[in-house]
Image (cartoon, rainbow, N blue to C red):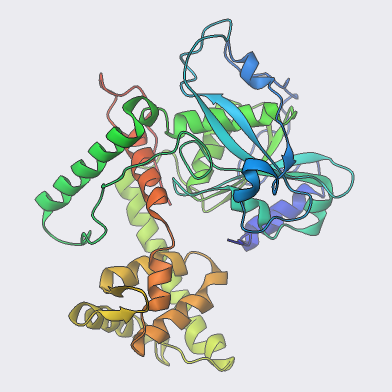
Length: 404
């Protein structure tokens, strides 16, 4: 998937190429003295921090399946990290489990001045595709762009798997609390069975933060630049707090407040989607119609929400057929909306999908609703549980917040 950088983030990313002292999103690092490559590494981690990466063209060998198409010059490799950063022997030679992070690098086109590491959202979203984002020419000229799949996700191993987990037909908006809780217990049990409890315990934001600093060192940088989206901003912020001397600039797009309570975060997120829907409605009846398209939300932005709600009621009363798939219901339309409202570049396809739905074809809505595959859903559930689990005898992970 090709993804554009948000407007404010685009300006901040461009500023990277204009000044070696700029800091956007997180402040305070410009006055910090440069760190060594292994600064912040605990005793016994040197072997991980100083490892070499066998970079090779992404289209070759086992990485040839990582991308449908590969941009010219992009290299792929794997970085080894400890499963549990707290369980490494002083000599670094313990038999502790490890993970392999799938990493892609787009070398600077001209003289290199730094590295920009992209951190994906979710939690549970793959990150390799961020190597293909529309970065400003100045950044592509002077910075290596690096993207990676977080631990447990995508091409990284071991992969979070929960076969036979949450029922895809379960109505998550239903009022049957007992049924929803039972379904979630079944899903968690499936994750434990298929992934392993030891792995699940170490897939949260705590380890993901250490992974970022490990990547910095392996990439040969004393300080690295971070570009983070949504949940990824939580990882970037935690990295800035944990390793303040090891990053130069952090650009945060869709910032997560790491001090915010989960319920407050969820409320704020839903308000954000509501505000975006209002913007999309204005776009639909304005620019979208002027370009000759038919707006599925009517001609008056004030009436757009009622038209949308009626569309949901109609879909529940009479699910809309899909070519080669299950009919679309109201929950599918909402899932498609979470995808379609997220990026301005997705607004036109989203509106076209709603219009097709009104004409009796739910195929495009189904495609948007199913955008996040089951593996991504599994990872979101597992990482969220790891972050928010109570710190009792069964869990030693750092409590964190988050998600989007």
